[in-house]
Length: 195
Picture 1 (cartoon, rainbow, N blue to C red):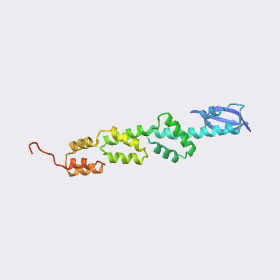
Picture 2: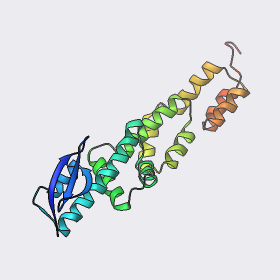
Picture 3: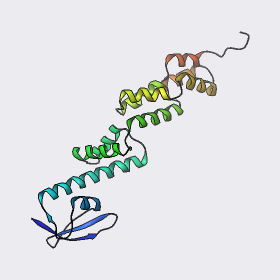
Picture 4: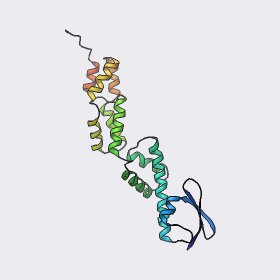
C-alpha cells in the first residue's frame, strides 16, 4: 500500500498529494480532509474509495453550482447539465441530493418563479404549463404555480388595454398561449357607452 509522504497547498482549496515520495495528484482540500489523508497515513482501499467518492461529489457540485449561479434550474435541467458536464450517475445523484437538502434545488420554487416570469412577459397559462412540462416539473408544482400567478383573464385584459382590441391582439394572445375566452375578449370590438 502507498503511504502519504507530503501534503502541500496548491491554491484555491486544493492540495498536492505525494505518495511514497512521488508527486501523485492535486485534489480538492475538502476531499483530502474527509478521506483523512495526512502525512504518514496509508492510502488503503477503503480510504481510496472515500477519496474517489468525495472527488466525484465535489466535481458534480461544482458543475451544478456554476449552473445555478447563472439562473435557477429545475431538477431535470440540472441533471442534464451534470450529464453534459461529464458527471457520472453516482455523482449526479449525490450532488442533486446535497443541493436539494441545502434548498438550492426545489422544483416548486422554480415552477413559481418561472411561471411568474413568463406571466409578466405576457404568456398565457397554456404556454406557462408547456414550458414547465418541458422542464419535467412535477404536475402538482405546475398546478400550484399556475394557481399562484395573476389570473389569465386579468393578464389578457391588461394586454388588450395596452395593445387595443382587434384581430392582431387576438392573434398575439393565441401565440402566447392564452385560452379561447381571453382571445375572444381581445377580438371583440370595444363597447361604447350607451350601445
